[in-house]
Length: 181
Length: 417
Image 1 (cartoon, rainbow over the protein chains, first blue to last red):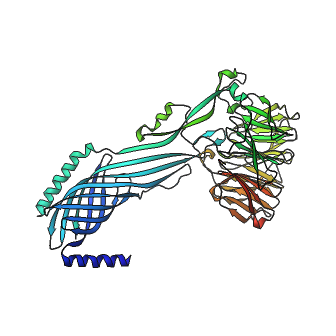
Image 2: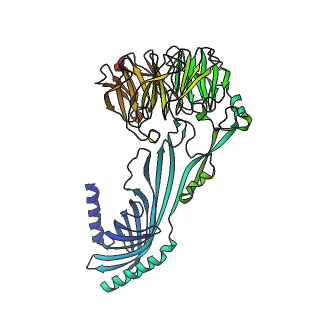
Image 3: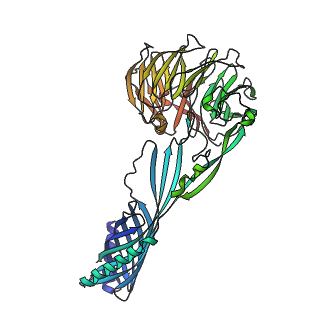
């Protein structure tokens, strides 16, 4: 891990010297507006920019309906200086509260696809930093397996379990504000 | 600049709010629905017969009779296993008995429930079982009709289910309720077993049928029934008595019946074998409750679960030296215990996902664990000739325990093989 960080710093320094590649981090917080509720998200994206392009890896904590942690790759393209579009895609990992196993039923969540796309605006602040505002649309999927024990009984004999598989597709509009450095 | 940032943020926020009505979550629910297959009672009774051996698909109760092991496949029938060589058991026949879950044997005649009927099968030649007799309507709690003398052509019984994968919107999940006889779970069976008297055969602690001398005893949810089987091929119902509710298991020991129920252990005297009467009982919290007895002690496993009114998971050892007033010796914590068996000082307990546990029970108040076999999820165990016959969720296992410190697997009959 230390070696990777060192390489990244060296590469960023070299890129900076050549004035072509730059290492950037985005830290943002946001509002998620969906069918069921208004919720929040916090994200961190880190990667390299080259000319008007940026590619990075990101991780979020998304609280809409089920708390999850999407892990994704993000691609940004700037038009002129301030306006950009972005597209993110990856896996949505569950981090769900209150899923303790009960005597009669247990619930398990499994990761599924995550993506987000949108448009944003960036205001340079100082030499290397910016304020960033973006709006977009995201969809996170999540698989939920509910296993009911002793589901059906015939006389004294009970079936061992009943299984139901739920696939959740949770869609939200996203408004995020953050900084780039 | 701050002003522009703020105005832009407000504009974007308002834009988002105005579009939220277009955003809808989606949720799909996938499950298996089981559509019933019906046969008339006439067809059901006619279908009780021996067939070619077939692979086990679900495990049920187990019964040992001589060199044969009878494995119940819940609601389908009974597999006849030639166990002359426990290291290499052979599946030699399948007896088709729709709606069966329990069995016992006397003098070469197999008794098995067939929905509300009692089927009698001649297995004196186990390689060629022959249907001998059907006693109609003796188990009312397993009938979907009330009159045992009803025209059997007018009654439809569910003998099987056709599996169908189904995906619906989460909001419309309960549409399967439109099919009142459908189920939404794996069709087949759970894993419980049955009993018998030592002179006829041997069953497990979770049995609901047992034979003692010339009587077959069966328990239903509420009743204890006694059948005179002095003529083994022709059982006669002698008595049916209400003995409580959620009756689960029956175990014979020294001219007594130990009956496990959700609420306690009942001890019935067989001094009048046609009409057993209660001699003692020991109440416990609501739990599922197989029971065995050995010498001065009864061993009771209590299990939690929906079927068991939740309850607790433990082994209780009762002092039964005074049958009229059993007393608790000690309680041991368990994972999710099902059946159990004891031979000499060795106590075997099927403890759910934690596997088969073997204890030194020389001192009932101080059990010592000898070994845990955790590679299986056992439901019941029968001990015979230093061989532990274990029915588990994935098949039938046999272990040699002639050396208790080196218990070894002799064979496994796996499902679908």
